[in-house]
View 1: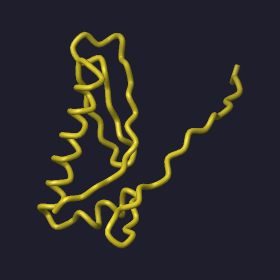
View 2: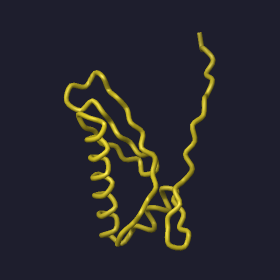
View 3: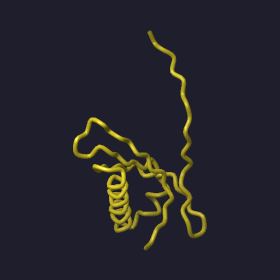
Length: 94
């Protein structure tokens, strides 16, 4: 079964890593992958998500899993949970 899931992809450039300096992360499914370039990290993330979805689906738990991750089913499509960016102020403790 084909499933289309809109997701956020957060890219982190880890300048200290020699082999896989880019990390791609999707908070909606809490999955991350990495690669030597941003493009490769994105590709690896897509593959990791695909493997996860196929595994959950093979166990007959895809709907349950997506609902647990915050997705909502609307007719024939899945609506992702809201992701927002906010600034938090943390006063110094010393």
